[in-house]
Structures are given as structure tokens and as C-alpha cells.
Image (cartoon, rainbow, N blue to C red; front, side):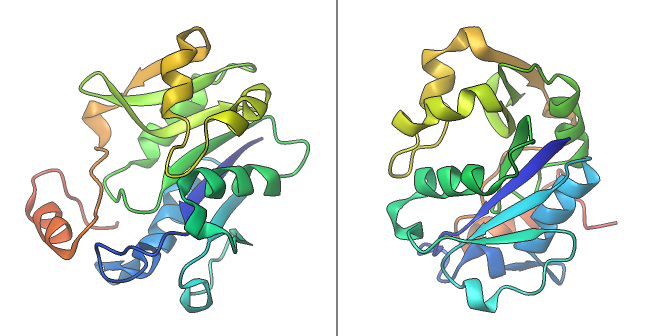
Length: 196
């Protein structure tokens, strides 16, 4: 049982509203992220919510996790999400709500490369991105890395012995949607595919 964790707590200041609520083809990014993890074979799926949490639509098949300290940054959201998972979950696949080009195929590839003690990371052009799988033995290491807006990136850099890289260039991309202009560019790109 490999869980899924969607980080969707930020205020989206540059976008002008929480990105969890931004719609792409009529679907809020938060629901798109839940579908990404579910279609990738993750269960259970937990969603860390903060800014705009009361406006988030119902998330069938997911467990909402309120995080009142979301202004502390991405790192605190990651730690809150990990703490919410059941004790028998051996690993979790983490994705960000603002990367709509991520693919369930990438999630499945990362899951397939799972090792009990390690980290599996999707790469694009040889650079690490999401999804990222964190084996439970690595979670305590994040206490010193997941600070402010930092997540696991520095852990990957410092502990390459724990990391398995999985190329995913052919099944999506790690593009962030930080502004409405970013979303417009994304929808005009050749890499964009509407749901379904």
C-alpha cells in the first residue's frame, strides 16, 4: 500500500487566489491532483489544505488534512501530510497541486521503482521533479530539511545513496502554474492534454 500526498495548502499570492481552487477545463486543480494520484494507483490519498480550505470542493476518494500553519511554507505542509498518514503506510508519493502536466503514468513508474529504504524521484531533462516517492525510513530525515519553502530537494542532494531516478520526460512535465499567464501558456503548449 503506497499512499498519495497532495500538497495544496498555499495561498497562491502570485496567482491571486489559492491554486487548489484554480480550474483547468472546469476541474479544480485540487481534484485534478487527487485524480492523478488515484489513477496512479496510490491509496489512501491525503490532501493538505490551508489557505481557502473552506472553499475546496468535496474530494471523493481523498482524506482532507487541515493545516493551520500553512503560512510556515511548503516544508511544514509536507511534514503535516506525512504525520497524517496511517502507521502501516510504508511509502508515499508526493505531488504539488500546481503542476497539471504531471501524469498518472509517472506516478506508476515511480511506484514501480519503490525501494523500502529509499527515495524515488521522477526526472525531466535529467533534473529531479515530481512525483517523488518517500520510503518511510526517510521521513525522519525530513525534519531538518523540510523548513520554510523547502521540501525534500536538499535531502536528494545530500543523500544520493538513497535516491533512484526515473526518467519521465515522455509522460508529462513539471511545469508550475504560478500566475494566470502561466496557465494560458500551458494550455497553448503541445504538452497539454485536457482531462479524459
